[in-house]
Length: 146
Image 1 (cartoon, one colour):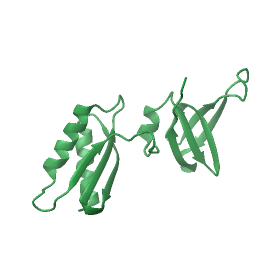
Image 2 (cartoon, one colour; image 1 turned 30 degrees about the horizontal axis):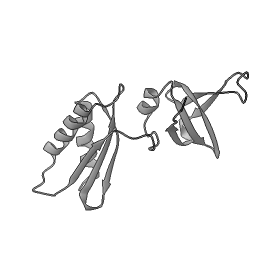
Image 3 (spheres, rainbow, N blue to C red; image 1 turned 90 degrees about the horizontal axis):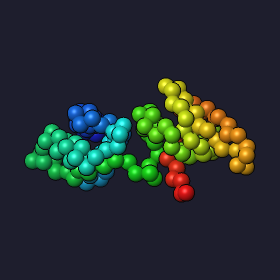
Image 4 (tube, rainbow, N blue to C red; image 1 turned 45 degrees about the vertical axis):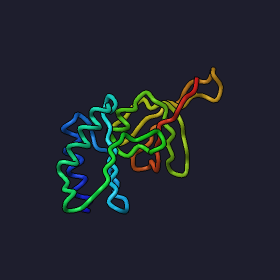
């Protein structure tokens, strides 16, 4: 299977359903996993429509495949700029330049992100930390338990 072709098909399918493509994985035995998301969250109906549109473009008679369309779970790192933008206001755990930081994502620009890092004590003010996208090795949405 041609991963480039599948990615193009998945991109068109997500855009046609008010969503955006995060990643396409082509695994052994023609297992295709498409990760999509939407600015307001991806609905089951959107997932079904994206799946149907991709399946309609691929021919099982030529090459059999197994297709899964999903939104990325919290264990998957953020991959694209639009995911960062969608998660403004949420806590991120970011690895960068042999360091790690956790804080609330307060701003996303084309070049970097800004986290609000809480002080060591409750009375201490939060500090802003700006990290360039080029320096980020991994960023995941953090889970807060209240």
